[in-house]
Length: 367
Image 1 (tube, rainbow, N blue to C red):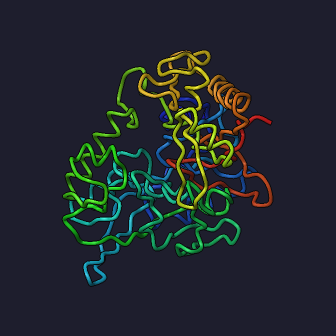
Image 2 (spheres, rainbow, N blue to C red):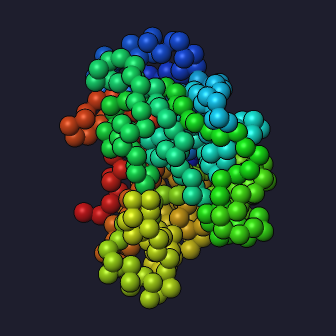
Image 3 (tube, rainbow, N blue to C red):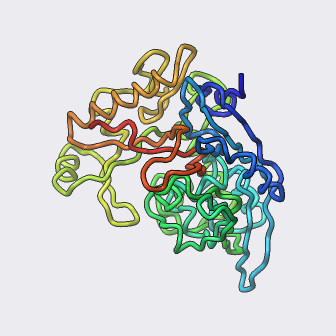
């Protein structure tokens, strides 16, 4: 039996991989890539495994776990600094490193599980910051060209929780990223009211860098957005659905019911997926299926307990999405990704997704 994917995902679900490779040395990537080809099934690239829903039957091909670590700093002048981080470096560690070096630009991304290399795939963001705000280039292996390439920000197709890496699964595997940060003892302007309240400052204020970074981590923990080490919520994959795009008519109806509506960076109207689920009578701590529960802190996070299987977790996602669609005509798109061959015209070896993984993201939406 091969390496169990359950041992490398935060849901602790998933059967064996036919071949499991761990990539630790950046210089050794050509050897890893050669070992991963010729299997007949696209390799699946795993980051931190905190957004991955592996199948009970496992994966019939090669899984590559990105475990390269480290970050290097290069001054650019005028208080600007370039930081190159290896793909396997935990995002939280990169944020802590930047804050310790008094470098501003990613301080509101602290406490997010997963690896630095996975962040561009989902265009990871929080509290008004997203990785694309400071990212200047990505070094990646292009499986179509079979060589290492550099992609500038404009080539990455960034949008709200979106990128070319996500829309073309299997095309690239991210090896390292470069962000441009600013030497400063102050954080970026506070854009979220509840964070401003916890810091006792007004919107737009620039609190001390370390204080702001710690406030983000504390806020995430208090709102159930952190990954606990133990307890009933320890086996999870974070938020299971993206906040869905809605029409102006749907937005008006939600606002009439005192529901939250916001515009994303592209100007699209979005509803709160968690609010929609709660309007469909799902609640924190509630049982959804065999071994699958809403977390005790928030409805939008599903947790796996002792009897859970990947099949049961998938069924729970479908059940939730179907309930919202029936009640509101709104389609929820899942965040957890599943190991599997790429689909569509970009068929090929898989690349990492948000917090590790690659697969089609509409798999659980109702037809």
